[in-house]
Length: 83
Image (cartoon, rainbow, N blue to C red; front, side, top):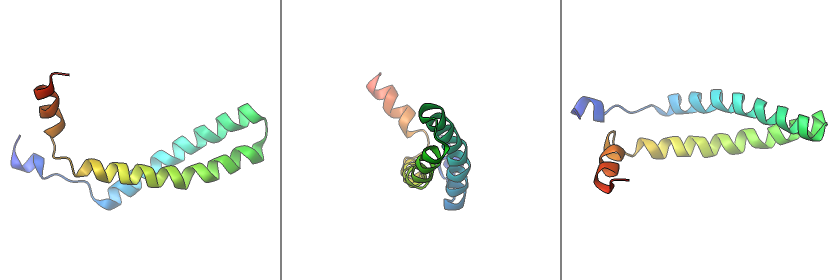
């Protein structure tokens, strides 16, 4: 893998924007499922209000952790392990 490809990193802002856009989609899905399950819109909105910030933070740190893994490293690891 070339040095130029290995040095490509996503900015913190890009990680934040990806997290926000994904959380909006995922939270709306969760609210819909909670509403359909409980039949209560208020309960569904409370679940969504708790779920959005907690999972956003988890996603952000997960995304940043993956940024510390050099590009191509995982593929090489799997080739060595023959998983």
